[in-house]
Image (cartoon, rainbow, N blue to C red; front, side):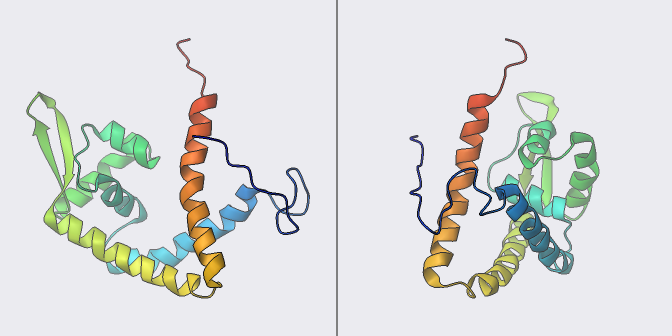
Length: 167
């Protein structure tokens, strides 16, 4: 993937400029505010933030290990066990032995887990839509495009600069 170069305009200060805060400084308070806005929605749907993260990540494909799931959502694998226990007790996920290796548990959504995830996501996104509707349409579309592009770009950059400890 080629590198994205944004033109320098009066709205886009040059790199290293003090005319704008660092991205992390702008995202951190926004992220905290969005998480706080989600908490009552999650509670109304009987989920915790980590439980919701698990339901989102499982989607429609089972995970082969709990460690892989923990890594994919940025959770410590030892803290994930009680979250998975609660989700399983509530009938939202299934842990099934892997037919290829009975020591491994495959994690997947149940139909109830999929329905709860979808209802929760719809409610969260309805709140987000109310916020986004306050932006001019062009700004809203640009923001959503930029956010969708930044995640893969950052992952690509991190992969390119990751040092192999075995090398």
